[in-house]
Length: 166
Image (cartoon, rainbow, N blue to C red; front, side, top):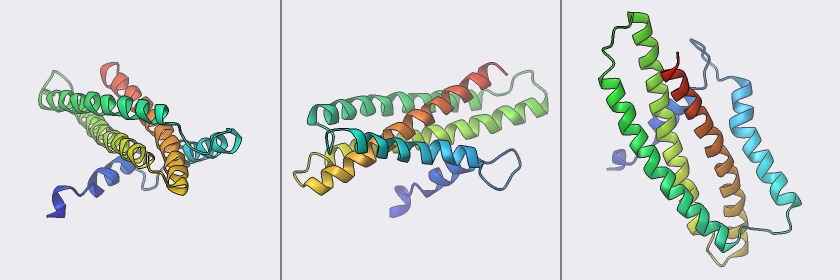
């Protein structure tokens, strides 16, 4: 029953896209950029800001923005699926293999970005709680995941560009 909502495969595939071509380990630079930077920036923002947590207007805005982003990313997934199905162009076998690999990585990244965006929406709803500690932790997570999603979307844009302009 839980297999219907198991997201572990999406997470594994997304992490696998960080590995160097043919490599078995993720790039240290990628780990720093996609994990370390969001955590560090989130910490810096809360350390030097005057507020302990995000205001209700910011939370409402985040819910709206990420709900729209989820819809746009779902449409992008469908577009990627149609491109994969129409990949029978006049390309060499190697070019087709490289494009299908890039499309597969792109598909994993978009799926992950959707999940991360949904996490921001869920944590934003949780942050409306009246409990100070829950609001504080939720706000920290929201800022970190928001930065992480922005970086992931930049990676998706770069991969789409590489796909269209090889």
